[in-house]
Length: 496
Image 1: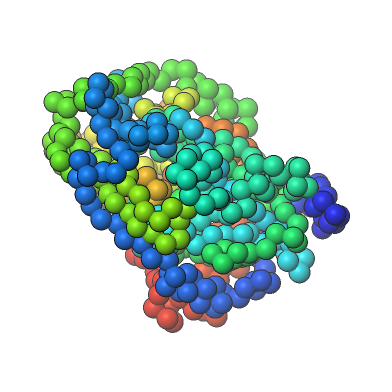
Image 2: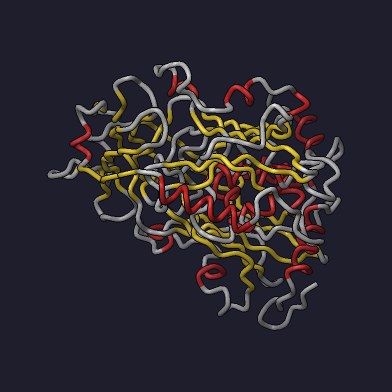
């Protein structure tokens, strides 16, 4: 265990850190807050957080407007983000060329989780946070979740709590456990990145009113509940150092070098051209602008909609903004199977127009099924039938989870992990590859290898009983979080 001095935690070896994380992931209780106390705290936060989101028109959108020359939808400060047009040409997928609106947010935000020992067990400092696009108001968020415009207080609001622990960690004697730039949804954001950080702090850091300390076991268990752990928390959790293979790496059917070479090949050989356009130029290319939305003529994909927000728990009390509203429930599914006794994940090299590096590793299946209804048979996603026809005993994880509520309105994906049988071969198409969970963890130490949806599934896979060594059950058991939630009817443990 690390020792604390006047300035913070002293470093330990990777093996010792892995053991500390494993102890937190398998702890039987919460040293700071019991499972029952957590739900009482969450109920109280939901009562305290008041938020109203009202649809409005673009003409009434306070602080935002369409640029007179380009038609881009922008904030009057020139900060935060803008909605622009995009023209795409690619050899990936059934549609070789299209136009669309896209969110352009060049600044890099901070997504950070503070961890510290309480009674010898590592805990994560999590936040109850409301976002205007959340389906249920309050969700469990990282310690810090802020764009640069927010934490530099362009809006003139209150400061972001705990920010200095992430902007100046070493100056405060904190230990950085993870610090990596990761992308966000490449179909909805253009070249968007956030700094994903995990910082170990000392006992001087205490939980504020909207914050709580939870063990890794407790946070992992909450991933199994609908729309509770938000997208930003999930991506940071995926960047945690891997605590599952401290005894040595599990061999994969492809070496680490072969995996990296395959990624480089996909990046080199895929063709994609994504050109930003004035937003007004996509009108007439399948997109229609009305007084209260920008939408596709087929009613597919997504719309850009204006909203007014009033909140009593944010840096400012009221504001307006555009949000991206997806049409249809998405599916993000990972097929896994044991090959030569080692668990492998079937990943796909996905091309999305907003990626910086052409492709990132996505789940086996990542789609919104209704968007394929107008295409020819056979043009739908490969392996979607395997996911849809999976037997109950094959389903290791199945949870409805929200995407970024600060930019997307009611965006949800059904996240699944399916244990495939021998009918899914090891010999797969060239844009798919079987990799181990350890190899994914190694890739997550670097930027732009694993996409947002796959990062959620990596975090989820680490919580599955029988996959993560030492985890007795995925849902913690009848006397723990699962039992408490089901008994009170607040959060359903079974979503199928």
